[in-house]
Amino acid sequence: MRRLHLASASQRRLTWIKQKFENFEITSAALLFEEPKPKWGAPVKEQVEFSCLKKAQAAAREGIVSQQAGHEHPEFVMVSDTIVSDPDDPLMPMGKPDDGQHAMAMLLRLSGNRHRVWSSTALIYPLSDFGEHQLHGGWTADFWTESAVVEFDELSEDRLLQLVSSESWKGKAGAYDLAGDVSEDTRLLDGEEVTVLGFAPSAIKKLESL
Image 1 (cartoon, one colour):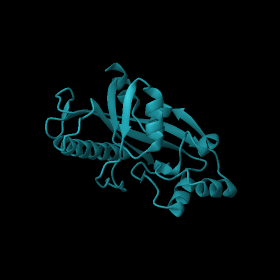
Image 2 (cartoon, one colour):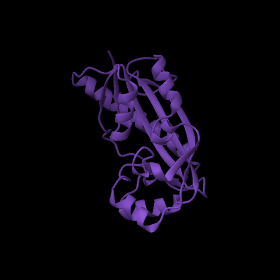
Image 3 (tube, rainbow, N blue to C red):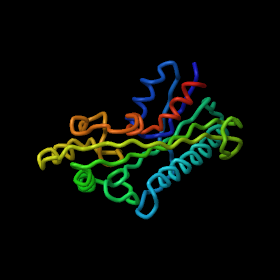
Image 4 (spheres, helix red, strand yellow):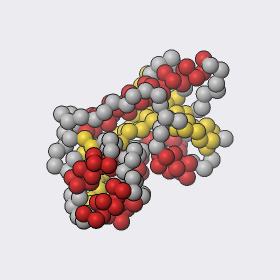
């Protein structure tokens, strides 16, 4: 059985990847480093790629430390990052909300609008030159970045309060989970659902081919 480690704290990503790759032995754990926070001023595509690169570098460093402690490394490690673009400003990223008030503000911006969601995913190969990009200690990686377009219904005040109070926004870029509570209020207009759920589709196809 092939072994994949998902370096992520996202339960949604873990659930999805386990359902997709039932023939893999899959482990997961959050990275220990502090993720870069998205900020206004650069295209969201560039910001999500930068964040994914930093996660991949951290995963390689932490993996090397784990090896030095005598732990066996998996065949593959995967990291991913997802950022929502503001409906009206392509330089305004919407990452994970800090609290319920922040989540409310994000949902108000998305209500009744279309927006683009970017996911960047890295597939990391421990102690292998299989990947195109060099990381640390002989680890390499391949990167993919893709986007999808989602449209929100106009959300009533009661619906907004319901979504925020459910806490379904926690840990979700743009304060929503397309496969969760907000599914009845949204439509995927372009791209693949997996992009919104947290992975670049081409990375998944690459993993399927290995």
